[in-house]
Length: 304
Length: 274
Image (cartoon, rainbow over all chains, first blue to last red; front, top):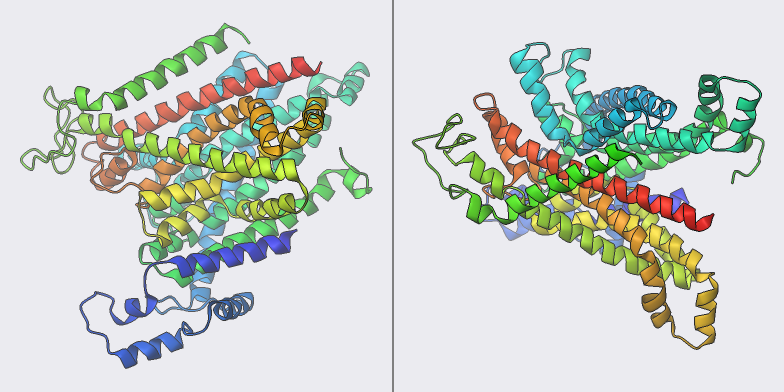
């Protein structure tokens, strides 16, 4: 199932490039729109870029190159896209991991608290808090954080990257709405599990409520949560764009945005393909994680 | 569902009504023209003349805030409406006819699901040029799958029902069955996703406009205002805070209403099943 998805996305990525109205040859020879282009020169550049070939041939060539990691050069900076991606990826990965850690810690914590105090004041308060978290745009939160922690309290650096402390605000920006989603998902899946028969059995055997929740219900409710977190991780690896732009982090998302603004379509294609690849890999990782979490699958049983 | 829940949902409805009324009545309520530049009075703090102060080129912030939701709310509605229409048609076709049509549609929607929403939006909005049209297209392309998946599942379930068999026996055509008999049964679940998706669309429109890929300055729009304020909010924090509060109030009230709809719907479904 994953290979066709990847194929489809690669065609999509390629078509996006074809559909772009800008002429890459013009863009190289005539970046400011003032030069008169010599026809011969135009043809040479056109051929060098392989734009003379029929579209399917261009696609196959492009895909072949992409599969070997050869993503081409940026039209504008003429830098290798591969190298640029390799340089930028670590920043995005660090940010994604930090956002993920925040999501797992607070999302699960809030979710478990809500489930254990169902319909009590804690549950109500946290439900409101998580809805609020879903409703706050990341970019606005980022500005508020800067106002409070940088301008008023002088606690954190605004931009630039000096170690851990410079990832705190971007991390919160990336994680805020996902903590909300994760907490709600955790709550509902634990409550679903608590409604099942084996929980009744466990409680009637005299296990206390906390043990039942933590050891049995929580463990089983991890399955939908894992799927969600995996997709989320793929999502931030592809674009924690807003946090990267506001906090000047030279990550993948920032790269994509600047490419988009200059119509640098090889870079955008590479970026789309890259995020799709990340998604596919994450889907595989999630499937493997299921084996660890759920012994039923290991034993070859069908879950239904 | 206690009293607390009721007060919560009523508060959310009032909040939503206030924001919608403010946006609709902006031309009547706003004290100034939102785009009127006053270079003699830039970055003024709040005063009786300008309740929320003025921005870097002297435009009245209060007036801009009042106008600031009009375009993005309409865009979010249009995007969600279009994805709903597209998603429902595709989902109904896939669920009802099954076979090759279903296979094709399912694999196409897998492709669309394989891209994180933001990536797709950046790619489309950027390659087609930043602007309202590409933002709409990007939003529709990323959110139709949510509708079509749900509709497909529901239609597949409904197809097995006896009344559909009966209708077929009476010689009703596929078209008639789909639109006259199956579609009405989908309304409640579609409404719920619509409400949830609206909140999501508002956030996406806001994010894209903030990144410069959607609504463009000098449109008086909340996200555009926040982006414009990025160099000036240290002087007058209200420049960035006021429009943000509006976005939060809008999406918070919609989210609370959507939650409430979901709860209600689930309760009803359970009681029907039991």
